[in-house]
Length: 435
Ligand code: CMX
Image 1 (tube, rainbow, N blue to C red):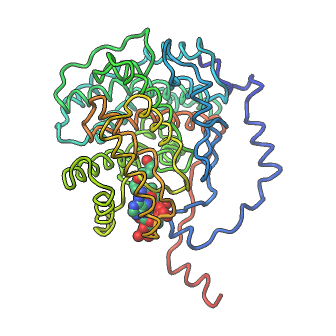
Image 2 (cartoon, rainbow, N blue to C red):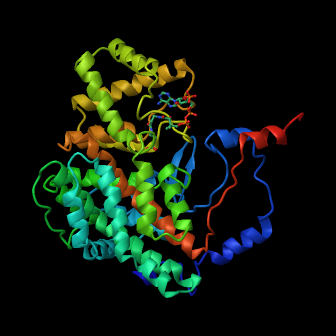
């Protein structure tokens, strides 16, 4: 498999010379001004990173190597009898820029299944966590502990050349992705008292195995949901908190387990991945306050009370997007196909018809439309996965695909240590005094 990826020096697709040429020709050209608001405003819109795997357009949403979500659903290989893309194919696409054949996809499923076992001490570490420790904290702990067996850290300590970094990082990234279902499955079963984690089936695909470890593989529709879920949550260009954290920590040559553990800690924040938990908590609170089958007026009043209480409406708004997130639409279409009459899905639809108008009227949010997190929880709940605190772990399994692809490319391209400049407010005042 390693030989199939186009990074090695022999490959015609090797983009290292291309990057050199871009830098030689355009290296000193400007993107435009950096203004003081960029420094105080969370660097919103500041051009600062390179990542070829996916690009986010404010209006259109995400494209993975130039392909929209519907195009990925059409083009990427499916499981026999399935209609959703296999995330194995998406990883291949992110990494190589090419749509794999069904056989290549199958080979990746087999490779990941063969690497899936986690060290005994990581199992014990998870078994010792109190069930009250948030699943995301447990997830991060376990991923960081995998650094014990990092090929990259070991090779680095032995003194490999820079040119060899990417190969070891590739090995670690493959291990990382492969081991996530066993970690996620163990956390789920420990926290909710669901008994022993079953074994991975080496003949099945990654999503089937994840569903199996969670106890849902008997339901083929849930397995299909996992395939769609992992595909669409995998990557969202380079600047979001989890992707950027992974890249930043990786730039210090911390191995992929340390880098992805850090990324998970960012994903665990309520303005980022934890929003999928927050959405369900918020919907359930709404139901207990205004009842099921509530009128539009009652929903409006509840949304306003959230805003007046100084809280955000979870699942709405985005730092880059200015339209409804195509990841929301893909999940809505899945719901229309599989659970059109589900009461919670109806509430999600009702909220969709009400919240944007209110956020526009409130006048603060730059984007009043729903993001990916507004829809994922209702789908999981429908199939019986109603442990809301667990939801972000599934986002974390998926986001590893994008961060891993990025880490491999960063080391292949020799990306340097990230080190932007910070300024004090005093420095800004004196710099612009009288101007
Ligand atoms: N509800 C209420 N207020 C909102 C809002 C929402 N959903 N979205 C934005 N705003 C507010 C902001 O809090 C900000 O208020 P202040 O000026 O008082 O600080 C103002 O509108 C302007 O914010 P913005 O420029 O539109 O949004 P940001 O780029 O700063 O933040 C995001 C983006 C996603 C953090 C924000 O929209 C938000 O908090 N949404 C709810 C949480 C959520 O769904 N997060 C998940 C995002 C997807 C993901 O990463 O998984």
